[in-house]
Image (tube, rainbow, N blue to C red; front, side, top):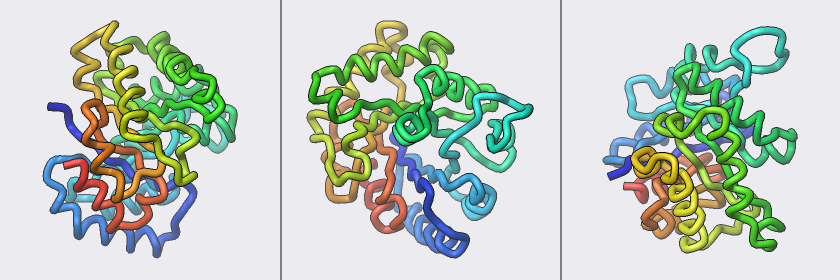
Length: 250
């Protein structure tokens, strides 16, 4: 049976006071989550604080991004080795906001994926289509292209130490959610596509769903055979809501 992973992406939110309160709430309830893995991905400046607060618990820490380079003249970037040194286990790469707002190409995302693995981090590779792409019926083409960029650079074996998060862009922060059937269809496509290269790697791969997941819809989404947890945005900023989602992943 595949592991379940619920990761909270806090995006550009928080202060020292608020993250301490949030982590206190998550820590108090995390013991009730029996089998699902829990991770939180704070803004980069708060990673050391969150890692300290998470020490001695089952809560893992991740970054929201990672430089594709390991060191050098790359002002404003953060290397994987730096994230690792401050307690990160995961690194989100290719989130739709990075792709759409900051112009990250499939090829750059693949390089960030590779950098995470070089540093000993587990990349959470985000893939997903725009609303117009879904309406054009090219969801699988888009998601397949995003996966192919990583496969071309790193090969199928790299997915043995990675997570994929399917996030339909039209459902992120909009209140709209893909139906469990819509989400399952794309998750199954991802697993089937990767299975063509290595069935064992594909079968063990954690594929999360992200896109306006809340406590009210998490159980139905996570009951689908190829949905192995969630990458949670807004709901991850409320400890009770986030923990309810984690429990649903059990």
